[in-house]
Length: 109
Image (cartoon, rainbow, N blue to C red; front, side, top):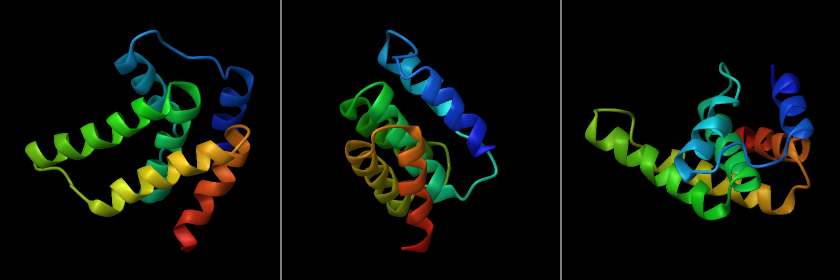
């Protein structure tokens, strides 16, 4: 499943939408389901940082936690830390495959 996601990111690294919300939503929709929560946060934030912008990645993470706070979702500082780890991974990764490797190591930390 992650391989398909990686292939999609590797073949189309351009911005998937013009608007911030559209870009964030499009990238988030490509993150595979069925992976550990912290890894999903890391991948989503990192991919948004790579394909949209670092600022939009921060906004997506904050927005998700605010939505959780007001809709009885699972608000979590650990999720916010995983988002920040994903952004850090994106800054030192050259592409989706390196981002995925970096985020996979998050679960073992």
